[in-house]
Image (cartoon, rainbow, N blue to C red):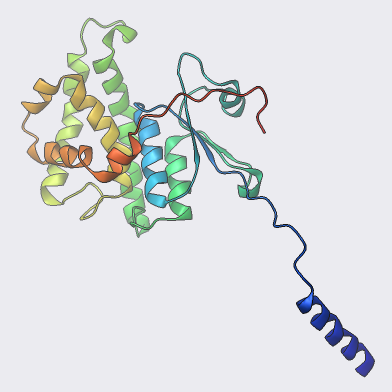
Length: 241
């Protein structure tokens, strides 16, 4: 037994004094985000990635010429798409909210994720209305011809009803998420921005002062400026590793 212990001791000493001749393993590939600058879904994914501090590769997409690799990962052909390396589980996240939740679960230095189950349920309820009825009305308002409409004013006015509920909420607190900007604000603000920019004069004439102040603050924020830098469209190489 003593001999065995002595052998282990020698082996440990030998290992400790051996020079490190092994090369370090190559770094894991960065997450890859396929994005389009003006897409509100892509905006909110980039917002979460920016505040998390996660380093990733940005691939700007030309929507009329979508990369074959992006389509292979996500045949639905919409942005954003986040491709994680094998080291990170080899996953493909093709829904913007999933990208936000995954990203913030990795690192959430500003506390964007709700702290309670009740808070998360409230956030997801608001986001679901934004992504469902409001987004449908927004699309028909902004692009009525695509829906066979002569005008988008009916959908504009229907969408405004929900925006007035957000305005009422913002009269009682600084942000949709509470007293600090959070997941709900980041997920919804890009869409309210698109609504406001469809007819800026009409939007400015409406009695939603708290909503207008909230959106204006978002548009001049550091985080919004940071995620709106212009990127050169990504050129797909012949072979992608």
